[in-house]
Each structure stands twice: as C-alpha cells, then as structure tokens.
Image (spheres, rainbow over the protein chains, first blue to last red):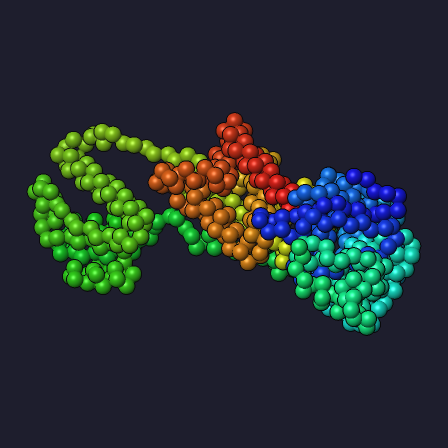
Length: 251
Length: 377
C-alpha cells in the first residue's frame, strides 16, 4: 500500500479484534495533507482503538494502513517519530515543571541538543507558559496544562497531529483559543486528526468520519453528513445527525 | 538504544524521585532502621539464660553446682526456690526459662558413686532457644562430671591422670560465634531487595495509573531504554544504601569486610540488578502501585528473609521448600557476602554464585523486555 502525494493517512480494511470482540471492523478512509479531519463516535465505538493503531501503539489484526509515509504494522518507530499525539488525559508528568516536561520530550524526540534553547523558548512562548516554566505542572489550571501537552506534542515539528478528545474538561474560552491555534497549524500544512464529543468543534473539521460499533456509518463534510443522516429534516444540525447515526446499528 | 532518549528518561525518573521525597527518605531510612533493629534487637545468640534453682539437697555439692552454673556467661541464676511448685509461676511470667531441680541425697549419691540425678526443666515455647539451652546444659553437666571425676582420681593418688579425649574446638571464620557477624551480610541482602524491588515496583505501575504509559507508548521510546532509564537512578540509590550499611556495620558493630571490595561491588551490582528487574517485572504485570507494593513484599522481601539461609538454615527445610530456595537470588548473594565478610574467599568459590546471579539478571531483564514489547514499546 502506498500513499498518494496528497494523502498523509490512508487505511484499508483495517480491523482490530480483542479476542472475539471486534473493536474496529474493516474500516477504510484517507486523510489529506493539511486537513483537519474529525473522527467522531460515541464512547466505545472504536475511536481510540483506531487512533492507537494509527499511532503505532497497537498492531491491527488485519488490513493495511500508511501514516506519514510509513506502514502502521512494520514501521511504528518511524511513525512515532513523525507524529504528535495528545490524548484525552493530559498525559504530562504533573510532578515535573513545564520546562522539565518540554526537555523530556525534546530528549525523547531526539532533537539535537544545540536546538534545545530555541525550541524551549518557542514552545513556552507559543503556549504562554514562559512565566510559569518552573512551577509544578500539577499546580497549573487544566487549560494551561492542556496547552503544555499540545506544545509537547509539537516540539519535534510533526507532520501529523493526533488529538484524542483534546478539549474534554476545558472551559469554552480556552477551547476557542485552542481551535484557532489548530487552524493556524493546519494552515501551515500540519495534518490534524481529531476525535471529539463536542459537535460545535466537529464543525471546524473539513471532513468527518463517524464510527459506530467499529464500523464507519458516515463520512464527508459536516453538511454532507447532516444531509445524509437526516434527509427529511432541513433544519437538522450535526448533533441531530450524530444521534441519528449512533442509534442505527451497522449492518 | 539512543543516549539522548536514555538521558531524558533517567532525568525524568530522577525528578520523580526528588519530588516524591518521602520515598527517597524511606530509601535511606530503611537501611538505618534495619541495621539498628537487626543488629541490636535480633540477636540469634543465646546467653544470660534466666535460671531458677530448687535445691532440696542444700549440700556443699549442690551449692557448688549452682555457683559454677551462675558463673558461666550462659546462665544467670535469678532465684533459688523453696518448692518446685513455684517453677510454673516463674516460667509463666517469663521470669525464668530454665529450672534446675536438685533432689535430696544429691551429694550423698555423688559421694557413694551412684548416679546422682537432677531434673532440668526448659521452657520449650521457643524451640530454637530451648535447643540451644539443652546443648549448653548438657555440655555444662559433662564438664562438671569430668571435673568431679578428675578430682576423685586425683584424691586417689593418680595425680597425673588426664582426660582421655579432649576436643579443642576452634571455630573458623566467625571466631566469637557472634550471630551479628552473620546478620550484617543478611541485612545488606534484605536492604537491597527492599529498596531495589519495592521502589521499582512502583515506577511502571505509576505510569499506568497516571495515564502517562499511553504517552510513553506513543513516543519513540524503546523497551530497553525505558527499562534501563528507570533502573539507573535506583541502581545508584541501592549502591549508596549498601555502602551505608557496610559503614554502619563497621562503625556500630565492628564488622569489617575481609574480602575484596571490588568483588563485593560486582556481586552487589548483579544482585541489585536482579532486585531492580524483579521490581520492574512486578510493576509491569500488576499495573497498580498498591498491588505492586504488596506483591513486592510477598515475592521479594519475604523469600529473601526466610528462604535465603539468613534466618532459617536451608538444610533444615523440607525438600520442596529447598527447591524453591534455588530461585531466590538472596540465597546466592548471602552466600557470597558471608564468604567475603567472614572467610575472605576468592573468585573460585564465589564464581558459581556470581554466574547464577548473572543468569538471573539476564532472564529477568529479558522477561521485562518481552513484556514491554508486548505492550507496544
């Protein structure tokens, strides 16, 4: 399997079983470079399992997939080096300061040490954490910790950013800031793959895939999905579409 | 293995350690407490045994026996009772552990060349202690007998008579038979297990509990880098602990390492790696700090204390237990330490033990590596 030059993620017939339970049931989709791609589904629908396969954390049972030009079954190491991943829990070391967290990520991503001072400044300025760089992370408000987690995931300038429910537990103002930042990233050519429960956030995505019980139930732009899911309701929104799609059992 | 990544992990673990300074305190308080506790309180030596005498004979001979008994360092005659009915009271209240009952006619029998019996009652509630007391008393009675015999013969004019066989016992390697000399190597083995395995048993479980394991899995971190990076800080803490224990053993108890220091260091490092990988193994399997901690006590501390020849001799254990002791690293390490501390043995004797420890290190590390690989690292 290869990626076309315009694609940054492409999976085909991707399947993951845990024993007899089918978590992800032979899904096929692709994501374009620089796209904000939304991956929606209710809890337990297979979202996280898919993201973990794409990030090289778990191996698929069958099917193929390419991420950032690398095979998700054999080149997980290269994938991990070229993506950024921020999961729903803020995934930072809370007993370390922002400065120490950033240095940890720089070391893990093998960024040459002569670039460290400028990268540290770049990320701490971008996330507005310069003043609290030596405070313990656990003492920072959730919104700030989330910015730090995002900053850490971007330190090595990845081609693709995976965000697994990045804004859960964060106030609306912070979420708004967060999304304007994400849009700037995408404009710079970073592919953003995001899962969310907030339908207003899903509207920021150029394309969406909805997954229910491990199978894809709809895909397309937000307006296409609304039209597909609720053809007889002209004033339906994405929320209605989501509820209607999650109710239907996949074939 | 990438040095920048390894350094990042070591540094992170070091920060965890200094931020959670309580566990760091514990890491250094444990050796102090153990040395003092085991060194002073747990003496396996039996002496100054509280003894009561019920002397119905009240003769010169019976008094002589009592006086000589009291003069020995092993027995303290705490009371002379009038009636044997008081004995139970003394033993029940722990005021005496041995009662010696000298019947009337004791001296008369001795003089008349008849068997002069005396009854000895030993508190058997601690069998190891009772066994030692019985040994001492038998030896004491024998010595007393031979002196009686000699003086009798001397009075008969055979002044030159000598005891036919006299075993001159010289104990090697622990000349004073001080159990403390054996305890220090044992404590060092226990300290390494506690500090090494108990602290590392938390480190992978903590990543799972905090959700940071998911982050680690998403980062380009190798299983080997994570294992090594998490071990290095604890390795040095463990070594520091051993040095503290050695120093305290020397300062407080005058127990000096007779053997080669570098051999000691190599053996200690091997054993320490065993302890660390055991802790990491428990941590990876349980994924919970609470369970990991309990499992560490179950599977590392207790076997090291009970199945290592430290407190209970392996030779006296049932066969099944003896087989289990073969997989207890402390068994080999204590053997090495006793060799180095008391006998100054060289590599030829210690070599096989070192090889066993080395193999254990390799097996445990391999196991940990496979476990983390399966997790997606």
